[in-house]
Amino acid sequence: MRRWKQVRWAEAGQITAILGWPKSDHDADPPEVFFDRLVEEGRVDDAALFLGQALPRFEAVAWAARTVQDLSPTSGVQDAEALKATLLWLQEPSDGRRRAASEIAEQSRGTSPQRMCALAVFYSGGSITSTDVEPVLPPKDVAGAFASGAVLTAAAESGRHTESLRSALVLGDALASGRETARP
Image (tube, rainbow, N blue to C red):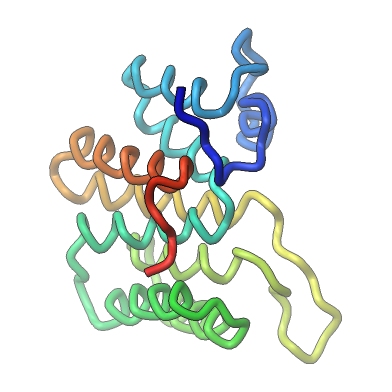
């Protein structure tokens, strides 16, 4: 049986609690078993939401960025800049690059998958306040929510929602199990 070596959660219920899902008989299952069940049941959107919270934040951003690169052509300069900022942060995850991704995301409006990737970067860690005030850490679920939102939006915009999403889930599973690296 494969294991999600990169995932710190021991039980699926820890992740479903973050998502606000009702308790189930499968909460004690390992996350990868619960994920497989979602996919087998055809609940691919739920599987993407689950994976976004299961993955460590860096891996979640890498998953979103690669999926968006593959599925969603940039529709403007701001989208291209948002994806570029995400990819630069993945190469060098510094606070300066994290804040640069936030600035670009703020300049672009709407719900493009590229913008959501940049927002996932910003909320991946570090203070979400300006540097001249007391630090405030982001809520733990926000980076994963933006990452899975980027994946779901890119899949929807591809015109092949289920097929594209299944492909993205394969990549996310490979990142979770350590068969694929999150580093560019």
